Image 1 (cartoon, rainbow, N blue to C red):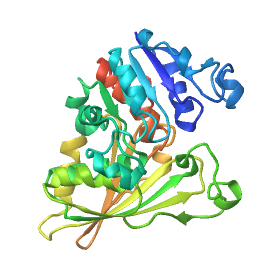
Image 2: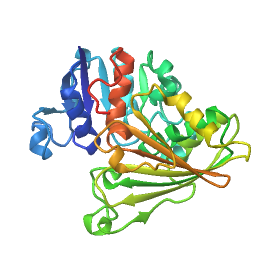
Image 3: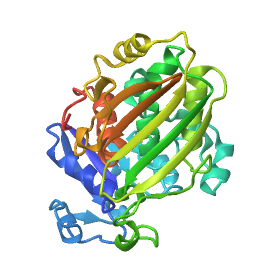
Length: 335
């Protein structure tokens, strides 16, 4: 049995994570931290939440847990990771504090200097289908962003097989929960309902360097990402449509073989195959990623769908925990 603690329990990600952990047969929830709602139960704060008691961080007993999940805004996780490290507690961070490999990228993309460079070098990127061997011994896991999860899972087989080029165009759409629980002028119901809106189009979204660093690593040279995210008028779900140019020498059978060889044994990858497109209905409320593709001349069009709150956040965090502690990877998660 693994004892787990959660910090940042009342956001969409924290609520989903606690739901999964309380239903996990190998996990005991040691504490759930909420700075704003300490003293209440989660069900008092969030309709449909569990009866878990919320506490201040000062009341969280790190010495009594094995793994700490951090569901905090960007820039606030690193000091808590340091405290957990001193107590030999594994950490799975769902913020971006350890996703980027180079500290000099943080001022540009997240507006702050990275103050824990040693920890940054120890973090393992938590995409199990790609980095599983490294995850097994990880003390600190950087849980991927939701957009990068859908994009990197869709592109990894192509880059691994040499079937992709140096420029990728991504048109992605996410449900409103991806923007977080705190409302803004652009996420209110009146702004979102019956509307579809692009934002931070081109190469300015903070998930661009997260995607580019791994595409560059897999290709062996820089890859240019053109990224167009959209706010979708649904509560959850994320769909990426990705355009990749290919040489004329590659055909559909090469593409199908690349995906099959890479993912045939992966329980959370649903390969739809040639000329079948992924949709939110394939994945919502599951930890799966559905991938389909078709060809338009020399351009391969890939669709990749995930539930942004589960495979794009809390479910993937639990999948990473399962890898670390040697549980069956599907334990507590819906395929």
